[in-house]
Every structure is written in structure tokens, then in C-alpha cells.
Image (cartoon, rainbow, N blue to C red; front, side, top):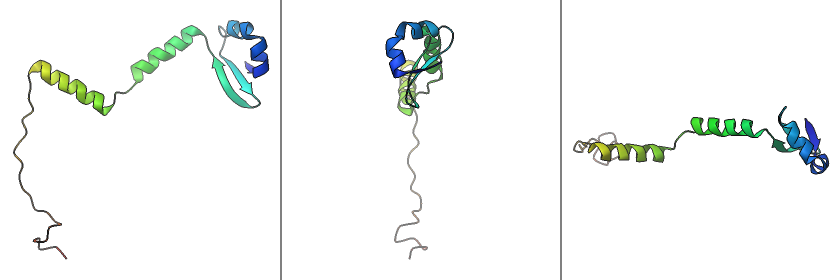
Length: 95
């Protein structure tokens, strides 16, 4: 249901009771400023958000680092090989 800010201030108890049926929306003029939902619905949202949250690249590398430490694993890095640089002056294609 839609409520104005004035109505919400005067009838907060009624609004909270109505959240068991459906979310309650509070507006100032035509702008939505608040939504009041049932606590169980909000908890479901928080659980969903936590399950679907993607970890950052930094977090993924920290997990990988921890796994490598637990398994006593070291990454073998091959020696670096020089390769032709197309931007160097001794290149046949340089200007």
C-alpha cells in the first residue's frame, strides 16, 4: 500500500501491522522514500544477498594464497625469455 509521509508518521503501528500482508511504501509527493517489509521477508533478502554476493578478485587471490599455504604448494614460474620488441629501434619494421 502507498502512504504519504504524514500518514506514516501518524499511523506507524498500523503500517507495521500491514507488513505481514504486503510491503508498505512511503512517499513524499511522488518520490518513494521508504519501504517497510515483514522481518521474515527482509531476512530472506539478506540470506539471498549473502549467497549471491560475488567475491572480489582480491578475495579470490587471498583464498588461493591460503589454499597454497595449506597444501604447501609453490607455483613454478618458468624463466623469462626475451622476445622481439616491435617498438625497438633495431627492429626492421621501425620508422
